[in-house]
Image (tube, rainbow, N blue to C red; front, side, top):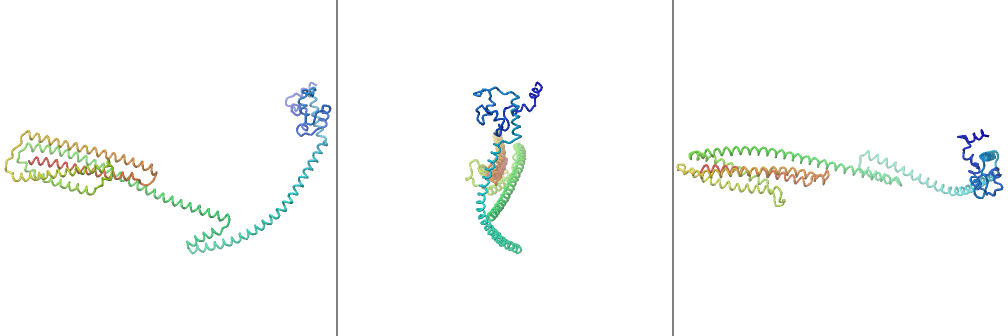
Length: 448
């Protein structure tokens, strides 16, 4: 017995399975069929069908006071249940099977009756569908004939090379289609036309963008050329300034030499004064012609615009030209006096008067130099402001138009560049006039 019990409790044994250890068989627990062994065990307890499993699992509790089965009894009960179910069939199982077969036969008969009715109704529908199919086949054959005719006409038109008839044939070919084919062809045709329109619009837009890019490149080239020209002008003006300084020094030396010399050498400077007057007249005529070429309506421009500066420069130049004319008149009178009274001895000025005169001349020269420096500083500021305005206008145009066409900002910048050039040339002319006036004053003083 000990050996047997040791085998029952062995690990991995079938006896540790739930169905072997439990006092219930597969038939009673899972399917609901009752075996003879189960009914024999159930007698005398007053237990209804379906309550045996709960009673056996809860044996010894509640109203059914009974000792718990041993392991051997449980095993023997389960084995007997398996043997009985395996070797013989119960009447209950056969009855259930017959009832199920009867029910299945009844359901099949009902389905057959319903299917016969459906077949009769479907027969009529099938005949209708056949008629419709015949009709559709006839329509399709007619359409195929028309399509062949249309294709032949299209081939003839293509061979003849008539574009208008081809378009008419396309429309006719599209109108011939019926049903879904017509809608599909119309959709395809419309989509293709929209695609062509989009492509043409994109091509036009690309051409415009290319034109704008070319224009911007031209403007950039113009600005670069203006910058180079301005740099050349600045270099040339610096050279002129150095030359004028050297000339001022030379004239100061000549004035000192003349002041130290006698009156006999003074009449010999008349020819130099006449040449200086001719040069002043030439610069005045150039200034007037330049002013006529570059006239601008300053009333419509804002107060801070460079054109107003140009206007002020022209005004100062006109004032200086009038001043130079007065000095020219006085020099002509003095020249006549010198020619008529060459032999007359002139009274010499006193040393105090000469010193005061030369001090005034030096002050006037210094003032002219300061004015020239201030004008150069203003020119440099205008050039820097022009570059900043160009950059700002380019940024504004990029922000507004993206890649678009030239806006008003670049046109304003171009105007300002043009007007700054006018201002520079006007300042240059005014400086030349001032220099000539200074030379005239010095020569007049020498003659006197």
